[in-house]
Length: 109
Image 1 (cartoon, rainbow, N blue to C red):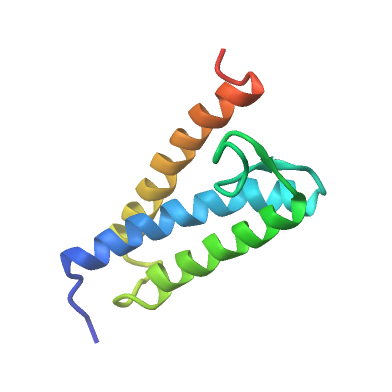
Image 2 (cartoon, rainbow, N blue to C red):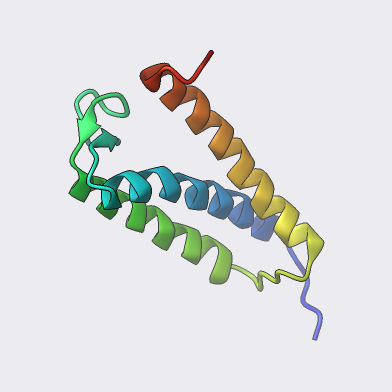
């Protein structure tokens, strides 16, 4: 049965991709036991938070991504449009994170 993808499904998938991309740096650093920037640090987004806070923040982002992708509409990995919209959201967030964290870690050469 073919379902109709409404415009707001695409918006949800885009932001689901963004939250999914934001999961990665927080979980990787948190699981590695390293402090990393988070919205809960001082100053927010620039100061360091503990590895525990980053694991929790990464898992929260993963939960939001799940809700936006798996619970809104009927996301289908076989539908190119769904995958492209999710991928664009992840790409946009990844580029924004690269610029932001690059300023803090010397990655913006």
